[in-house]
Structure formats: structure tokens, C-alpha cells
Image (cartoon, rainbow, N blue to C red; front, side, top):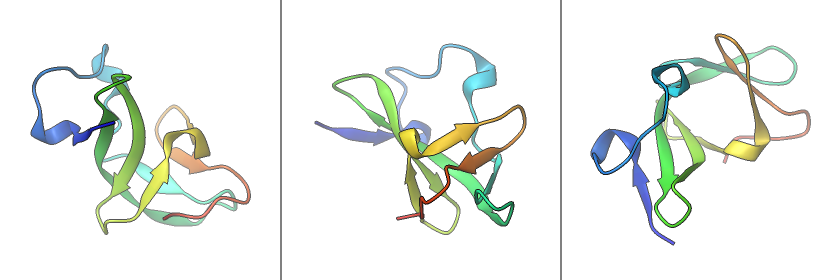
Length: 81
């Protein structure tokens, strides 16, 4: 498996512009603002996003977040890595 940052590649990307959640705020399940998304980390084998990375370098697995209309929220019991 090879991972690439969305901002550093041009071979593939999100299908719709609305799927580009970079710069969106990320909140804990309790509503605390944790930061802002800097980048998406793609798995080149599956051509899917595996992680989001915040501006401070913290990451979350994509299956551990809920993507809402204008923000991202960590699922209950999940911490940033």
C-alpha cells in the first residue's frame, strides 16, 4: 500500500469538488473544535481516502469521522492519532 497526500499528486482526486473537505473544521463528538483539515491521505491501491490530516499534523482514520454538511466530527470514543 502506498499513501499520497492529495495536495501533492495529480494522478487522481475526488470525483466531485464538494468532496474536497480540506480547510473544513474538525470537531470532537462532544462539540470541541479540534482543528482544520490540511490534507487528505489517499491509498493508491484502493484509490480511496484513508486519513484526514489536520493543520497541526494530527490524523484521523476516515472511518472514524462523520462528514457533515460543513464540518467533520469524530465518532464517539475516537481520538486523533
